[in-house]
Image (tube, rainbow, N blue to C red; front, side, top):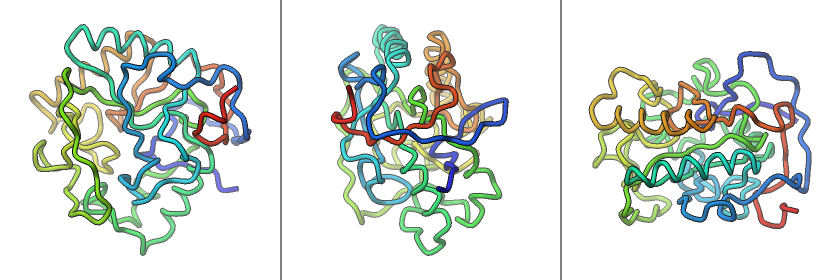
Length: 258
């Protein structure tokens, strides 16, 4: 089994070498929960269950568009949501637990140079054959441990988000808000899963409201025990995660839960 993950699909931000993953399945442990059961007010836009992602099709392991997390991380996220709502914002999650089989699919896709139908949106300034050399593919992903997620802030009330239609003209994730995909997120300076240095949380080219929005998200998440991966403004790991050395492979579906 190939074991690696796309960094824009979120590398593990770990200071120590990761042991070799040992995927488990097909059922989740008892403390993996559906976030909607813990806090139904958090919005979801699970991109890997759809065709609107950097591969361009639903990803293996995502039969349902759910946010599954360890209960510890979900409860912490509930507290983040309460703080966000008090500021007129809501959380929206793009990805939570990710099966190892999905990671394997990302790796296989990265090694097929002809498959570039989503390049114009997700990596407009990067040749696909640079993904390995530039660090967008690397270590096992923390997402497969169940306490890491990708998310943003949306206004309250939240505007309608247009549906993505496969084959529609793509807009670069690096374009200014209003010229990229009309996500209902507040302006974060780039779109989600943007393979570009502008997506680095502290990139100096991101200024004004977008920089303030990144700062607010980071502050809210950090206060409740999450750690940002600095190459991706959307990526956060719950530091006190219960499975620091286990990579799961059960599918993202309610039937995986106990």
